[in-house]
Image (cartoon, rainbow, N blue to C red; front, top):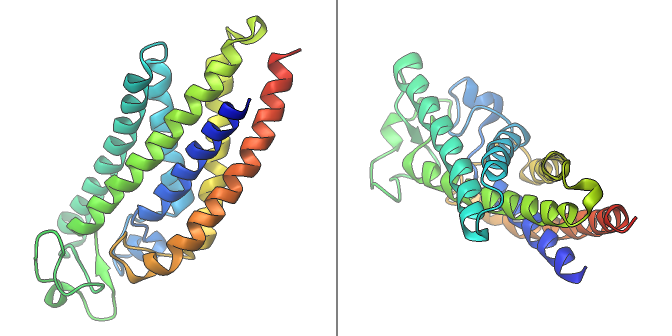
Amino acid sequence: MLTILLLLIVAATLIGLGVHFIPVGGAPAALSTTAGIPTGAPMITIGMGVTGILVTSSVIGNSMLTVLLSGMSASMLMMAITMFFSNMVHVYGVGVNISSSTFNEDPITSFSQEEYVSPGTTGHGIPTVSFISGLIGSLLGGLGGSLLYVTIYDMLSSSPAYVSRAGVMAALLTLLVFFVIAVMSSYNIGGTIQGFYDKKFNSKIKAGLVASILTAILMAVIYTIVLGGLTHV
């Protein structure tokens, strides 16, 4: 049971840590007045989680490495497609350049930013460094989600009473953790964030990591008690 508890803690913590890397612009990004994905942290995190869970469940039964890589890559692909089409809309729909006032030059491409940021805004779309940050966040979130799903699935499938329902129950319980962690992380971020290069990231990540660990411990203890009770009836 201790191993299960530790795996659940690690998995949930990875999800919370990953959320902080995702560039989220919320309503301002939807109005093209700041850089980031034009939605809130909980929404994009749930989308990332659902995608990872669906793929993870489809390859369950293979090696642990295959399952984890599948869920992780699915979450990263979902995030990459979301950010790509967000940029397409900004460039070809709104007619603005992808840029941010957070840095004078993009740390990845060295592309000059300042002259392309519209007056009264803090940027548009998702610059390259923010795009990379989003991929890192989805990698961590997808890895955490896959690990969480596998841990719960293995525990449920060990009981004859839940073998046929293990997949569905594991998916629902994993998604619940995504909801809790996403909302907690969203409150910690407190609005918009442009990824790991944002100054706000440095001031939020420590508190976010501590909050993620504490939330993960609470969820892991509850899950261990509940799952232990179900599988030992």
